[in-house]
Length: 427
Image (cartoon, rainbow, N blue to C red; front, side, top):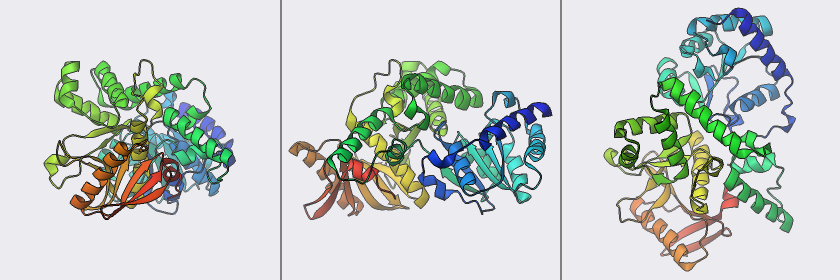
């Protein structure tokens, strides 16, 4: 148990820090509109550590002039907090903020076992609750079981390229030579350093990334799941980060590390639940096909080369593909659209992304950094055209560094989109 005076001290310090916030300089983010302040449902913001979840919630609450209580459970002085301490926590919040508050923001709530019962009680008493967490099991396990139908899920990733430009004051609309050059330079910086908010102002990006990965592996995975072989977990994590956009070979990893396939799959699942990696499954109407040959994508490309001995591939096409996939996850989730890759057989040409509304393919997307050579252009466009006929989908998009244009091939129209134009779309 945690003493009441300690809780009071921590929450008072957090209140003083909150009261000093100035949101005027904070980057506007697409997910702000997804938080429903008037809803009786718990607002659950989840995502990888340091993606800006707390900042997002504070920004929405402050700019809407909401009087709210705040508790950040990711504080070392509250590390031993148990279920029975949560009522004391609520009492301390009332002492600090007053008993008339109607909104409560609980940061990194998954650190306390039994938190879902506490949130459920708050909702029954008509409290508006906003919760953040850094583990997907927050939803798939405890939350879905105990708050069925009583939560609104918002998933947050590190900065998109549009948000990155806002942070660095890059003009995203001007067509002057200087503005175009600034955007190109910003894109090359983004494709190398990624979009974690805190890293943007740091010189020692490598130190930041390494400490972030370790925090995820230790706090969000090892402690939570009692992982025995931290070394194997760490090696799997770095292997997948270095090999983003590739199919996971569970058997090969198991052989290299001297552990079972089952353990490798379990560790990969943990990495996914902690949002370090995102998995993409194959498009198929057969469920057995969908559970094999998963592809792994890194939550942010900045993790790929800002690590000691990373040996991350310098293939800019893979980095662009990774960026596009995470951007698709941002855009598709609010519309309840699914994302797959398409490769019906080992010899078939692959299409990077298939966007589906239930079982209907509504857009096929191919990503290629450079299509300037006839061979590259033919390879990428032929993949789209063949898949278009097989999936009965006529919306075909090819994202590259080329200029935006439309081409007609074999009776099919392909929309070639400049990566910068596509990434800077508002919707």
